[in-house]
Amino acid sequence: MAKTVLSVDDSSSIRQMVAFTLKGAGYEVIEAVDGQDGLNKAKMKTVDLVLTDQNMPVMDGLTLIRTLRSMPSYRTVPILMLTTESSDAMKMQGKSAGATGWLVKPFDPAKLLEVVRKVIG
Amino acid sequence: MEQQNGKSMWGVLSGVAVVALLLHAGVGAVGLGSWSAPLNVLITVIAGAILWGAGKNSGGGRPVVGGSAETRESAVENVLMQTYPQFSNQFSATHADMEQVQRLLADAIAKLMESFEGMQKLIQSQRDAALRVTVQQSEQMGNASLEEFLDETSNTLKQLVGSIVNNSKVGMELVDKMDAVSQQVRSILKVLGEIDGISKQTNLLALNAAIEAARAGEAGRGFAVVADEVRKLSARAEHFSHQIRANMNQVHEAIEEAEQAITTMATLDMDFAVRSKGQLEHTLGSVQQMNQGMSEVIEQQQIISREVDMVVGRAVTSLQFQDMVNQLLQHAKGRVDSMENAWHMMGDWARESKQGSTASRERIDQMRNEVDSLLTRHNKTIINKAVNQQKLETGDIELF
Image 1 (cartoon, helix red, strand yellow):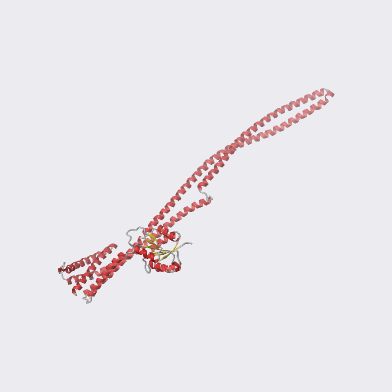
Image 2: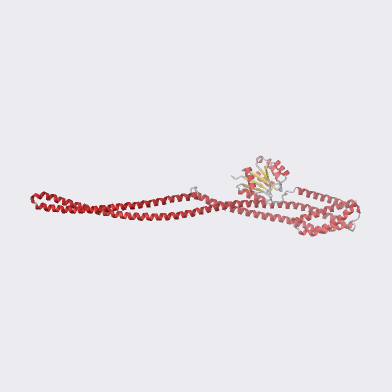
C-alpha cells in the first residue's frame, strides 16, 4: 500500500512540484494550503510523513509542528520543513518544535525523494 | 514652542526625504517609471527645505536658500498637497502591478509544471513500452535471450544440414553398392547362359543316347529309359534356368531403378540443404544484427530517459524561483504598504497644517514617531526577510 505524504504550502506551484516528485515515485500526496488546513487534513487521516513550509497565512509551519506533536498519533510521525528560511536560529526553533529535518528551498526533486525514502522508506 | 515645532518639523521632513528616497529605490526595483515625475518634484523641494533647515539649526541663523521659514513650510505643504493624489495613485498602481506579476507568475509556472509533468509521463510511457517489448520477447522464448535463441537455432540447423549431407554420402555409397549388386546379377545371368548351354548339350546327348539305345534293340531298352530321363532333366533344368533369368532380369531392373532414384535423391538433397543452410545463416545473421540494433536503441532510450528525468529535475528546481519571487514581492508589498501609510499620514498633516490646526505639534511629533517606526520596521523586515538566496542553487538538507 502506498505511503501517504501531507504537503503543506501556501504556494500552489511548490505543492504541485512536491506532488509531481512524490507521486512519480509511488507515494500518495495530500495537499494543504496553510498550517490550519494541514492540521485539519492530518486529523482526518494519519499520514506517514508531513512536509511543511514555514511562512504561511493563518498558521505557520512551526505552530503546525508543535500542534501535531501534542497529538498522540503524530508523536513519532516524521515532519520535514521545506522552506526558504535557512538561518540556524530558525532551524533550532524547528528542531525544538519537533521537526525531523530541514530542507531549504529550492529543492532538487531527486534529493527530496532521497530524503523521503530515507525517512519513511 | 515654535522652535520645538520647527525642529520637529525638520525631523519629519528628514524622514519624508528618506521615505521618498526609499520609494525611489523601491519602485525602481519593480520598474515603475511613472513614479519618477512626482517623486523628483517632491525630493527637490524637500531637500531644499532640509538644507535650509540644516543651515538654520547649525547656528548660522541664515537659510542656505532664500526666503522665510513660513514661506518654506508653506511651499512644502503645497508640494505635499499637490503631489498627494499622484502618489496615492502610484501606490495603488504599484500594488496592482505587483499582484499582477504574482498572478502571471503563478499561472505561467502552473502551466510549465503541467507541461513538464506531461513530458515526463510521455517519456515514462515510451520507456515502459520499450521494456514491455524486451519482456515479451523474453517470455515468448522461455526467458532466454534472442541471442541464445539464435545460437540454438543455428546449431540445430547445422546438425540438420550435417545429417542431410551425411544421408547424401550414405546414398552415394548405396549407389556404389547397388552397382556392385547389379554387376553380380549380370554375372549370374551370364552363368545362367552357360547353364542353358549345358542343358541343351545334355538334351542333345540324351537324344543321341536314345538313338543308340534304339539301334541296340532289346539290349538297349534300359539305356533308352535312362536317356529319356536325362532328356527330361535337361528340359527341367532349362525351364528353371529361364525362370531364374526372368527373375534376375526383374531384380536387375529394380536395382537399376533404385540406383537411379538414390543418385537423384542424394544429389538433389545435398544442393537444397547447402542452399537452405546459406539462406538460413544469412537470415539468422540479419535477425542477430536487428536484435543487436534494437538492444542498442533500447539502451540509448533508457539513457535519454534518465537524462530527461535529470533535466526535468533541474527545471523543477529552477521553477521554484516563482515561490521565492512571490515571497520577495510580498515582502516588497509590505514595504510599500508601510510607506503608503506614512504617505497618507503626511497628507493628513499637510492638510491640517494648511488649515492652521492647533494640534499640529502633536501631529508632527506623531509623524516623527511614525516615520522612525517605519524605518525601524523596514530594517527589521530586511533582517527577517524569508528569502535570502541570491541565486537559484539547491538548498541545504539537514536531518535532525
